[in-house]
Length: 137
Image (cartoon, rainbow, N blue to C red; front, side, top):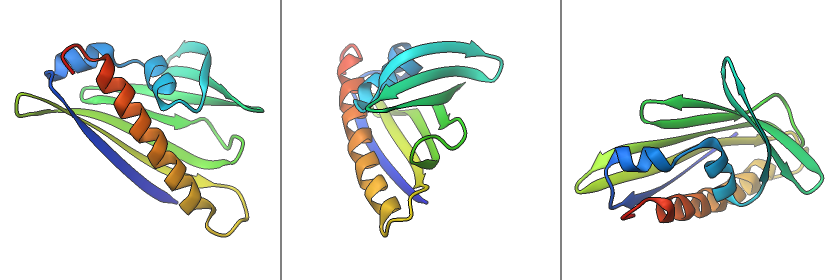
C-alpha cells in the first residue's frame, strides 16, 4: 500500500472553496473516470465512476474540513483506494490537500508503486481543476 499527497494554494477563503466541492466535481476533476450515477445513502453519497471496461463505486463522506471517499469493496484492480480532500485556511486563502492511499490486487512487481505514481498525477489534475473552479482561485 502506498500513500500519495498533493496540495495547492487557492486565493479564496474555505467557505468559498467548500461551495465548489461535490463528489461529482472531484471525480470529474481527477479525469480518469466519468460519473455515471449518484445515489444518496445513509452512510454518504455513492458515486458510480465509469472508465474503460470498469465501473467503480466510490462512497463519499462530507466532513467539516472537506471530503473523504473510498472504493466500495475490491473493485477491478483495486485492493484499497481511500482519498481525503481537506480545505484549511491559509494566509489570504485556503490550502487544498488531497491525500490518497492506494493498493492494487495485482501480482506484478512494483504494482503499488506504479499505482501511486498514477494516483499522484490524478491528484495533481484534480487540484488544478478544483482550484480553477473556485471564484477568485
